[in-house]
Length: 66
Image 1: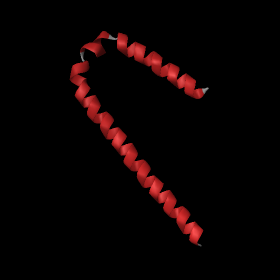
Image 2: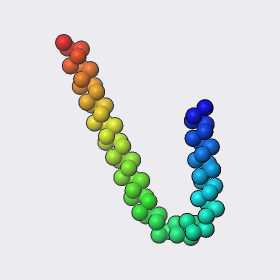
Image 3: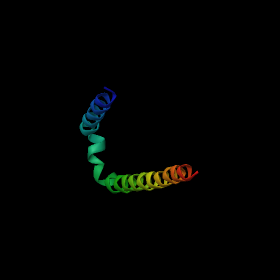
Image 4: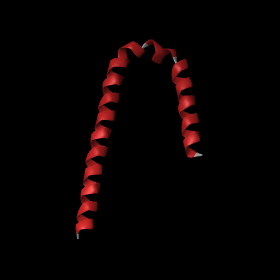
């Protein structure tokens, strides 16, 4: 149920942003900056998740050997 509500909110936000002329007319100027921020956020999340995964698995392996 929560997932459905999140999808609905994202859809409504997309409609609101898409109908805002100020945002749509300035999209070409903020596009590259938004792309760089998005790629950085995704890469940071992937690296963070990978490090957390290794740390958790290391702790589990140490407990299994004891």
